[in-house]
Image 1 (cartoon, rainbow, N blue to C red):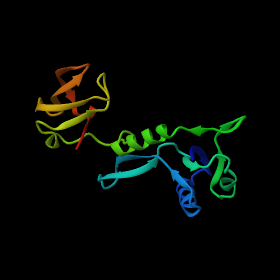
Image 2 (cartoon, rainbow, N blue to C red):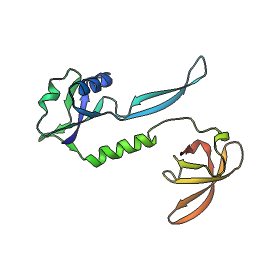
Image 3 (cartoon, helix red, strand yellow):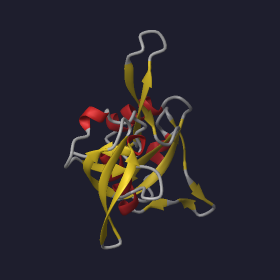
Image 4 (cartoon, rainbow, N blue to C red):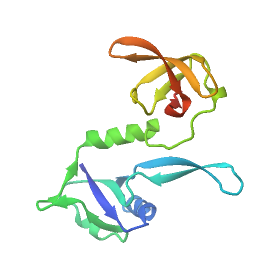
Length: 168
């Protein structure tokens, strides 16, 4: 069985996922979370959105594409002149791991009170994006000092909390 990319009917991604489940077709729709502030109540709201709007991954036996054409919310299968193109299992697994880790999420920075010495953080943006660090102390209202391991050496640097994500 291989993974393929399916284009869904516009705005019907969730219904397409339900239809795949009903047809017993393994499907995966990568999602991201976004935090926004409600314009009237000012409360923070977390919502989920598709990472690739209008597209899902489906796992099929090669050549069994006819089943997808029978479904109401499937528009087409991505491919070229030779037919549908499969996606390596490793790529789909990588996207699933990234989603589980929260790499696609757009969340507000953690409050300063939540970042304590010895906290483990992930650097989301800046020159050290993608590295993990260990907080040593707070250096103001929005800056922390942390030890970052990069290129087999440890460095202590100041990082803005807007660039950080707490790691459990």
